[in-house]
Image (tube, rainbow, N blue to C red; front, side):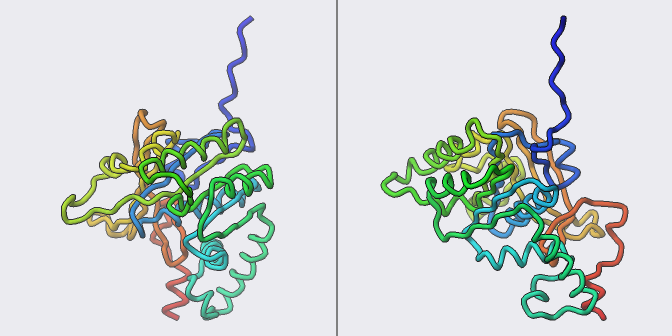
Length: 279
């Protein structure tokens, strides 16, 4: 009697990526896996990470977001802006029309029901990350960003291999999915611009983390001169299993909402934020 092949249908605990173009390449993130999101400053890493957090928590999966670059209040405002389709500046200045205020109130009620924990520290340690990750049976753990992990007494030359080994150990044999956000050095006068392929190669001194990741996503924000109707896009160059095939995906960047979304037939429809601004 032949064995029944394993089901290819993801279980409820498997974490799906937020954009349709990415899901076409990577239907879900495996339990116990490590994923790296990399890119220069301002190139959509945290926006992508927060979209993943929203997508996962809204599906009822237990989610932990560990961050250092912004306050907990700042992260919460970005989540609310994305969910309510209002500008985060409008939330901070309380400059919302009645419709926007209603959407914000509904978003607050929705977000409060999510199994989502936000934790902020200016500096993280591997021990602190492990302790926080063990407080609950999380489906998804996001660390934003790995540059703020402190390793006292570890030589700089060994820093990234220690971080990689420590993070692998945290999820080894666990059901959680671990996603890290890491800084990719930007282009400069001596190196010129980077192609998408070069972005992946130039993880450079963070190579141990990329090498140990089952998925690496290099992000970039750009405006296409060939399709100006698309506006700003989040470009994602994906390397699966490091040595596997690579692919490219795109999402529509709605940065005033602090989010990116799938391209759809309705992408040119009226924007509620623009409507409120223009009166």
